[in-house]
Length: 209
Image (cartoon, rainbow, N blue to C red; front, side, top):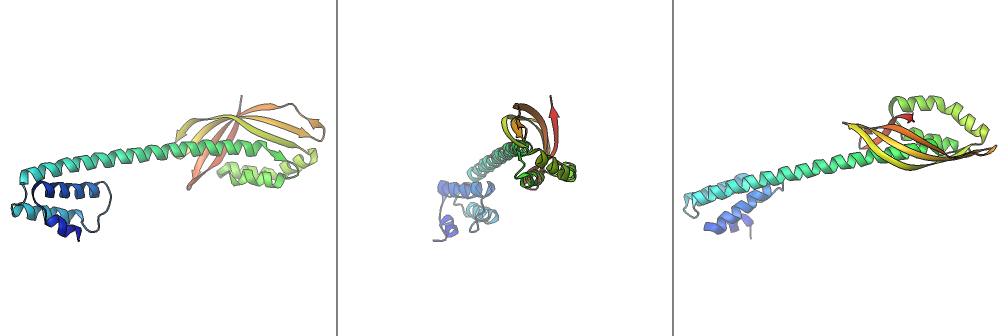
């Protein structure tokens, strides 16, 4: 049976409930191809004109439903905004952590790939500057037969403004060269991360005390 035909066959309270239900569903953003809002209102008007429903009760019920639907939509939008904001913060911290690992994990036998990982996760002036300095850096790493491995020990969002954020990252670094193993070091970085399309990339790095 066609849903509209079914609604048109109702009377009284049952009709009011059906009309309110259809309006609530549509007002919360769910499209109803078989019962657009204008058609539902037209059915309500015809029902009132035909004496099949109490007009005062119908108007009061529709007003309440409209208010509830608006509140539901607003709460849903606020929940969506909160989810998106949390997801963006998590992405910024995740990218900063990975950027810190990339910067501190370099193996002379794979240094070209290691450098490319840093470049791929970078953007803006920081990327350009690193690319310009990468050739002599690679030569030094190979000459010293340097190996380093960084492990993030802590990371947290320091500040966020729009599509960029400052993330503090603490890294423990183990390294060795042809001359032998060096003493482990603890580094702290302030890493700026910026949104690039749906992703985020490192746009600046500063070592802090």
